[in-house]
Image 1: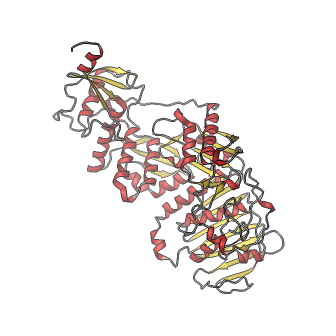
Image 2: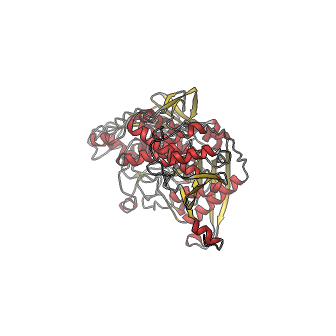
Image 3: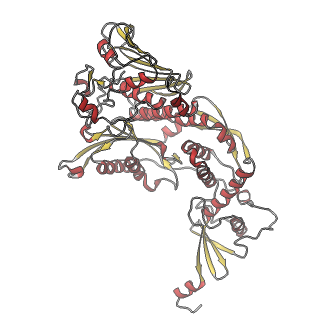
Length: 595
């Protein structure tokens, strides 16, 4: 499994990679100049990504990844792919040596995931690299590159020369790559890495992306000797089960469809053939962040805002406000229409027919969900007395903005109608309650530990593999917010306490949102990240449409009092208005009256 082997995954739309010549060759200078420049190895997750690319290109049906600590101590990636002959294995650690691209080839349209011939050489310069490989014919080969040796002129000799050692080795067909002491000679790079849990969370998320993009390949991921992810290599539903949990997998649907984009899109007269394969969780399974919309192109996990937006467009109005779907979507296109040479990380790709492809994705997702059983069930708490406890002092000494207002009823199970002097106020009940909860939580957060409530019995929360890794990395921050958790086997965590600064307690969804906010927080904007998190936490226990029509007049009065005590009562924490007003003169004019 190297950066220099052909692929033969046999995916539709990706071309037949098994027919290309397998010999590893150096690229010519002109081709090297066309390859996107930049650091190939910037952190442990990049190492894993490059090695997984190579395994998939080698036609592997199983890929096992093992990581110690943050990945700088040890990364091991083993596959059952095609392997390499000795001469190719020795040349594979040379820079710009590859079997995936002709010496004078164009990176645009290359059918393989790798093509630059840089990965192994770049890893070898930053670590101790050992490659054990066998094509299944005779004795295998071990190539060792000492990252501390002078490698100015690498040799493929059979003895240790210039830091490179090549010797016979026993192995079944396939390749194992062992990377140790990553960045040992680059202390600045090591110091720039995040903590061990955070770096592993990046690796976990990346391996999950690959597993969902290539469901026919079995993946395992071990961390410090414990398996954190395992997929069987059978189908898309089983891959979703391996990455997420049984609840998510059971409430999902799969789709495989071919779409011919209209002729003329992308500047061509012919229609564009787009194949979309996806696993889509029902709208009852959501997350607060967009990280769980996983998109791949020809089996390569990519970051493409246009395609991710197309997936969300396909869900349309099925999603609750502020929630994001869980979906894994792979788009197969003719290789000539994909440019993977946009960025050294190869996670950003150029699409020749981006709009046509996005339209196809949105239509396939929409059609798939239209035919699925999307019934939802929810157990909504209505502890109104607790939910509307005062934000400030309980003695009524603080005058409120709505002290003289009189609630007169509700409209459409959401809006509270209030008489206030010469005005009719229309209050968005949910937005108002959000503001109340947000300010209570913010005050508790600033002045003292957040009040918590124990869960008896504790709630078991199933997390995806990358969410579980992030939960370990941010355990202290979650505890400070009132979420006390403990590991409960695999990707499951037991939630023992939740924040309760607002009558109603938070729930497992609030825990997921808090986790997502912490993962996405930029340390340079910590305050903004905290405010966003508090806003999300405030939303969960707030009254929603359908809970207002049964409120008594006293309950409406209580909501007005609590809103009036807020520092900023006229906008919810997300910036939407809470109160609209219509004066009597406007109403009178509508009826042709002079007041």
